[in-house]
Image 1: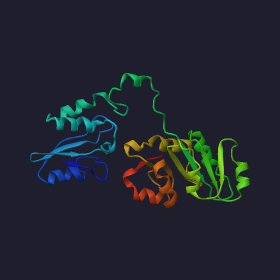
Image 2: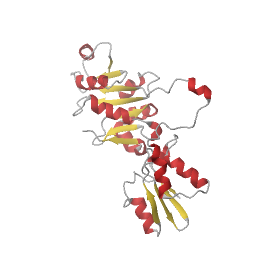
Image 3: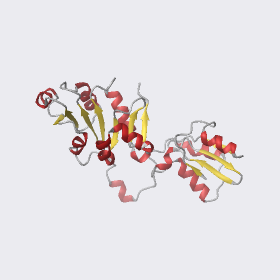
Length: 255
């Protein structure tokens, strides 16, 4: 029995492990010293094995859960000591099957290219937001001018920022190059915006791990969105999109 919870299981008293006990079962092991897969929980109810799936169950990349399921499929018993030994290598993020010899000559996969789309709230140029985006390495940085386009374009750093006349987020997203993988949507006037805060959100972006929308933990008015969601966020806005696609949202605790 594979159980996909609505959120991460954080301890043995959480919803799924409590349900296993109430059903007359037992928890065999919780936790795996490897990431992804560290929130794996194994139990049983009668003769049925129960696996509370960690978040990496959504990932196509090899992870700790795959190691467990492969043994289940082969009829190999798994004890807590076996699970603990599986984590001896630590992080599995870059683990994969050995590629063919020709693949060694191929260039490594590029990092995600993330742009910034900043919506100016008035005639003042959003300089703090632009500086944070540039310092975090976002490219390109696009500003939607709410008013006085000419003055705002002149106030922004030359050759580093694209200024667009208008306030339509969908139109701004359409201007981004085709090789942009995601965009940071940033309204002007964000409290405590900084290069460090932007960098933390950008580092957390990973659609393969179920993190296609990355938001600050205490706010859904700005964040990073994957390219395949551009059209939907342009129509409904970031907060509505995050509420609709909760399974794709990852929240970052910012200082």
